[in-house]
Image (cartoon, rainbow, N blue to C red; front, side, top):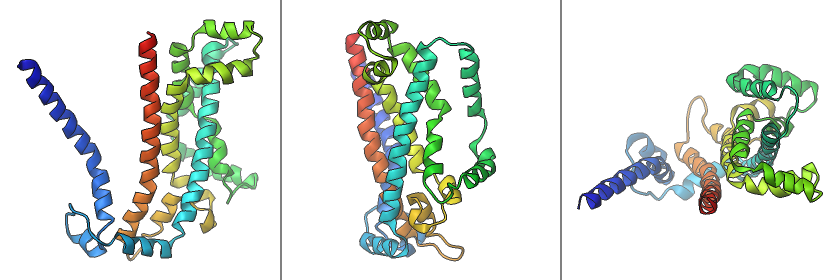
Length: 273
């Protein structure tokens, strides 16, 4: 009886935690279906009938789907580059022996302590000198370096990639690139999925960098376009919330897909163990 009661309390606690996490998303979706006057005056708990009107004003104000496409292009490209090169560097720091390896790794970790905003002026001037302003290159190329990703991938390679399997690949005649791409990357799948979630969400929600380096409205990303709905004198809350819903849904879908990869990888490791 005590065991059943304990389990029931635990389930109630988990349900409460899940409801707390989902409440903001529920509120966001519900709010997007109401008029501006209701949003400003009421606590909204039930759906309204203004979603299509809010969406129509949003589409008339900004080219929301152009911004959506721009964001998808930047985010997917940056995430692939981020994950691949972080895995490559993390694997190198983990399994390759070279002079000053630990010193260089500590230097990489040290860059995590420097806020990115401190270098934004220098970054802008560098991109200007390279004639990359008002292009997507300043948003994509920096994804090659990710100190947190390198740290995460090194830790994962240390614990999950056996040195013996690398040696076996060399004995079979594989080159280093073949070993990494054909053997190491599949083993690091759960770690890649974890880093991919962080990289995707971070780049999808990036607001400061696109606002600074992109001048053409047709090149802008979704967060900047949604923020442009708020002016100095008035705000269209209904249209803003519809834009936020459009921006959040891909994140939820991507997170659901990648989290399944993480769970499958952990379960497979537990079975093998």
